[in-house]
Image (cartoon, rainbow, N blue to C red; front, side, top):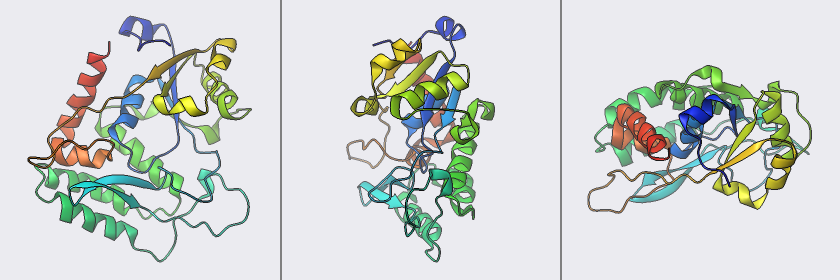
Length: 250
């Protein structure tokens, strides 16, 4: 298993990360973005017909604990649909409900006003397509965090072949990458040996979220949406947090 490359090593490689367009992702998602040269938004793959997915739900700090906040999607279709084809369920005011949940649970957070001001337009975005909505939010947040938009590519706009690990290798090669960065969750489905056989270096990155102060007198609850970090650390604090994490892993 490789370690995170140094700056000198990064200049000699083209590091690629691939991830589905999550719904207001946690800070670990953006840790991958800041480390990669090219970040591929995996939007052409199948959306699960049943069960939960990070593409339309995320955890926020509600009543002192992590609680799922869900954007309902229309699942009354036949057969297969790619993430790019999925629409939000009509007639449900989930955007307003989400903003009310944020207000009632984060109003006393030190950066509440700042965070709501920048996040409210993203949450209220009237776009009905799930992939377009999430991608817009991800790219906008990344830009706030000083990550250039030109490092993002959509898989639906690339030539690719294969499935599972072979698809990841194909996409990495499609953008000229020679190194692939994956998270700890890949162990259940990824065939690591195929990367070496294809001449692609594989880097495993297990993100350990830095603890920050949330509710007074309570233990830190990790794995929440980056919305939580904006509320308690502010935009500048999240920028600094990501830089410090990258620096500490060199």
